[in-house]
Amino acid sequence: MIDNTRLKNDMRLAVVLKQALSGGKNRFNNSGHLAGKSNRIELKGYLFPRLHAPALKEQPYFDDIVSKLLAKGIKL
View 1 (cartoon, rainbow, N blue to C red):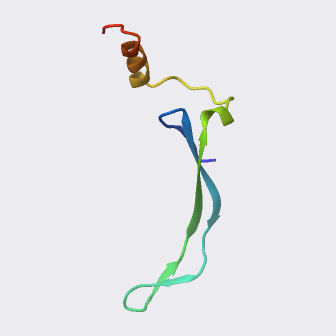
View 2 (tube, helix red, strand yellow):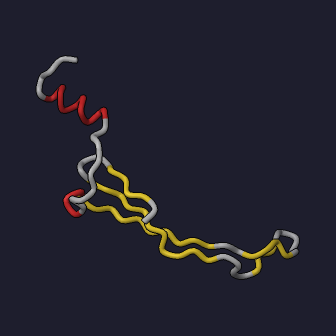
View 3 (cartoon, rainbow, N blue to C red):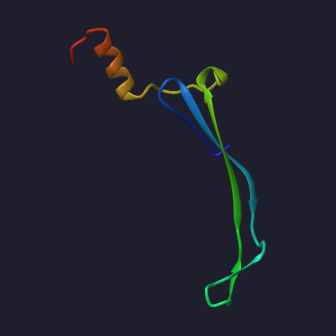
């Protein structure tokens, strides 16, 4: 896993590196000359509710704290 990011509405986004290949097929430039070997990575993104990842601890965002305080009627 490369990253696991918290989104709004208690959702998470995980970015996973599935495959990394280097030195693959030959690449050619616009004039037809060899430009080197192609490199390729395959990334997958997974969107899921936070409830599916309860072990991930994190600090609340500042705007989340402020909006909860304002919803309770606390003046800042």
